[in-house]
Image (cartoon, rainbow, N blue to C red; front, side, top):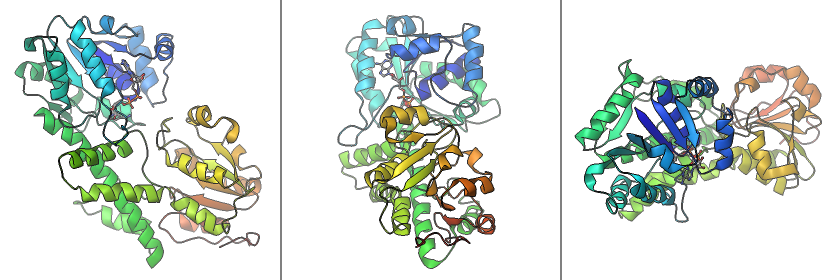
Length: 447
Ligand SMILES: NC(=O)c1ccc[n+]([C@@H]2O[C@H](COP(=O)([O-])OP(=O)(O)OC[C@H]3O[C@@H](n4cnc5c(N)ncnc54)[C@H](O)[C@@H]3O)[C@@H](O)[C@H]2O)c1
């Protein structure tokens, strides 16, 4: 099939590359000329494990192309994917201006039947709105608008796309359904389902899934906070809970709040949809409130430990990305914490395996960026772990203790085993678990 993907970001590039991998001819279009130039030169502009290999193979085979010209991209396409941004608007609702702008442009370009697919996360009713815009310029027989929300997770996006748990397709058109089924069949050979439903249900499914996952995280963060008060260990509670098959083991890890380009904005957008329909979605409001508070939990512990005096202290920070295996820093909790540290007069020496370039573009020289994880520890008062990258899991603890001014770790991701850390003599403060007091008296600071 001939496919066009409009918007070549995290979702668009993965979508386009994976459709090319299954033998389709794909043209990805983006308005960012610099990005398209880099893609044409064979450079993958984002970090996503496994993407570069597929990208290289399919561009070499001529199945994956890039352009800034919308007309060129969609001219011969049977299916057009919209993988455009839907950032939060001022009132929290999803900003649909990118989607509607492109829909308007498509109305001027399309001359034969095409399926236009909302791959972006869009509020209930958007497929109908896109169809209405197209219908201003085109006869209805020339297009169908389908909702096909994307469930990929950054960091494992390629794997998720190639082997999805399920594919959700919202359409009531038989013609569009057939084309979409044909396109997705190679991805579900192992028997995972393609669910066909109406457009509104498909749009709602995406928001319901993300909001539920965000709620699970906020719930566990509150359990962790309570564990600290009652003297329980959230690690043990999590294992005990998660082995119940009705609950499941995944997404029960407490930390410093959820971030990223999806959960914060999608929860907010669903709450806004609810209020538009005069529905008071109380749980969602709490999910957002809890998450906001959780992003401040680690700094609260840090402030308590240093008796509220962070002026002149040096903090080593491991991890900036909102989660491991991505360079995405959108809504990353690490940045909220760093902002507070800098504001309190502290110095930050940071390391992240992939996200430093993106952070540097915002912070410039307000943060010292380090070559590797150990460099960040040089003469630092303590270490703060913000993202659970694998390489932080088994460090050379002796070397760490030698580099840090004091062997103190604030761990926002519960990366280390408490017994191990105790035997190594670190002072260790994590989330929802008992504090480990260091062997050495930590100056006069230990709170
Ligand atoms: N990132 C994720 O993990 C993820 C997962 C599932 C769904 N989504 C949803 O997918 C959508 C896209 O997310 P993303 O993370 O890929 O965004 P992104 O910001 O990484 O990419 C969007 C791209 O669209 C381009 N663009 C903007 N206007 C354009 C136009 N008029 N024509 C062509 N290109 C244009 C931008 O230059 C950018 O490259 C959002 O709705 C998001 O909620 C994201």
